[in-house]
Length: 392
Image (cartoon, rainbow, N blue to C red; front, side, top):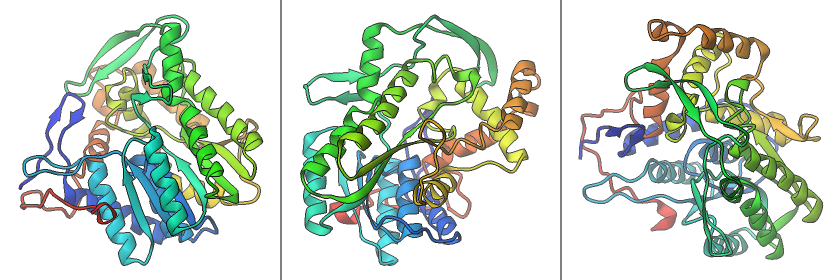
């Protein structure tokens, strides 16, 4: 099948297997070009098929020399429909890892479920004995919790309504948008989905099963962002959930013997979900322009390599005064945020192309799904039913 991107609104409903493989190969090549890291050797990555989770798995394998187990939640391709990008990414990673002599197996299922937790425990016990690092990189809009309830997250303010400018990525039209405050129930439900409860359940389950090494480290991911987005992130429902995540890291370290827990605050990225969030795409397109001009731009793999090599796999672990690993340090530099604010205060529809990197934004968006990758022949027929070796 010849596969082309099918974008509807902010959703891309196709993925390209050769493009995803080329993107994974490029991330691996980047890590191979960097100094090695003295780090973990048996790494469980919960949420390993896209973005920071995939980059974490690649960095752990190719910088630390680690064997990895990845938890994914993806769909295989059919005769008429492509697989998800995460499926193709995982297939490519397992292919390259095997060729390079690294153990790599994956479990496909709902990471929130007890069933998947038990599958991971059984696999670790059988193949490794113990894991020495657990990376938690889950981003989902809903969660079925152990109480049987399905909770859904919302992205809203928690105090009062907030109005600011946003952009329609299709038309480049700038308009005002107002985000309404969440109810107490919506705040509670968002914390249930995006807070630290499931992370702690994972670590406790692994510890109770005896498959965590003494001194094991675990890290979960977060985002804080600039003042422009604080009402909907840092001070909004997502921020409430992330405060719970930060508290959970302290609880894991204090209550689960032999485990060190950290939260890494990462930089803003173009994702399918963030494209639909008011205000964020305009900020992101400006941020891309400024960070590229200042030679500070990082993608997932550059950040996750730097996180492991410079911050997490050193003694002592490098954190700020609140115990957070700040991988958003380049994004939050005063000169970067000052430049973004200056653009934000003056942007118009007439100047949008001059003060943003809209082309770069869309390039990053398409690359998520394996499109617009240099060296890939998008006119060629490709097999869209690509197996993941460990799931066959």
